[in-house]
Image 1 (tube, one colour):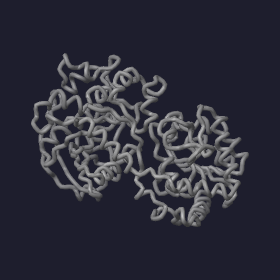
Image 2: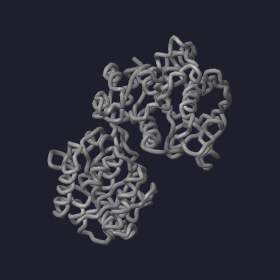
Image 3: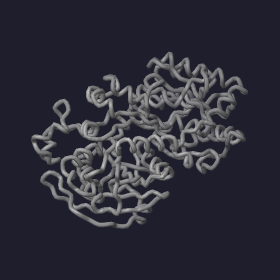
Image 4: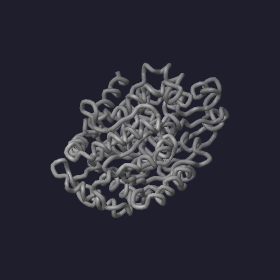
Length: 472
């Protein structure tokens, strides 16, 4: 089966978040399961030279977008057995950063059109084009409107995956005509609530819609989670499914990770104790094996549940715990963690920014990992923390609910709470600390965490089943 992933980012080439992790790892798992899965991305100027040096030019051609007729170069490289294609246009992609430009809508509309033009020039015939998030939501629309008679694309099916429904690619309706070139009598394909909505278009025109966890697939049919798209998703429920993401277990492996001070496994936990000691030293925390280290890594934004942490942080620190935070985002949360670091020297550490090697050391050296998210489509951090024997504390939402079961039940692998309430989160932290104080039972929890399997293999098989269903 031939599958082409169209996406705006992928590790290790270019990344801003979890989407890049998925696009960097899932194709390898699909190829291992018998697919020929390839990936197509924009050729951003921020892609490191070491990767650009390995690319070879396939060809160049013109791409029409509305009244525009733009150059497009197609480049190709291979990495870990996966073929990656790159769309080259310096006007759109030779800029600093992936997103946040005034013309992002036009940039990714161009990319969506270029993906389909590029297929005509590849020595590859995709049976399925798998589109990811709003940046590629127009691929099914353009395929339907402008490429249906192309022999190479006439039977191609599309799958559209929602990684985060909050970001939809929402523009004024003039955009549909002036930029996208959609005939006036067909502009309803992209219209939603009087706006031109890329994500709506992808959901409406694709053959199947997926999200990154089963619970999130249910949640986004509720107005509380759907950012206005709940009506559409309830209407399209017949083609909506949720498939839980995985993680790259080769990259995230405590047995071989070169970014952590000591390696370890479920057969020998001594290295984990060393990771904790070295993390405490690195972050200026008191070296104390009896203090439970609470790790937090990620964007400091409100939907991550940080207002809950802020509300009860002093009460958390009444327990024998330490807190290690790595991240950046909203200034209010950055200021709060700086204040807590000053207020509790040796017990709270805050590093502003994102430093991947330090993130791994926090995963490996912490005892628990706190993710009290208000919403979380899938979440990868809780799976990574389990991979390093660090027990998650999570709110039961989205992929957190699907991946973490409370230790109080059968096959529990973490501590959970249901309502978005600071006292309920505090209770989960307190239960974790009580178990931590019982050495033997805590060791059982760590060993159970290390035994969890969140590799991409299971997800890949489910995706193959989805592809087979649309091809039928």
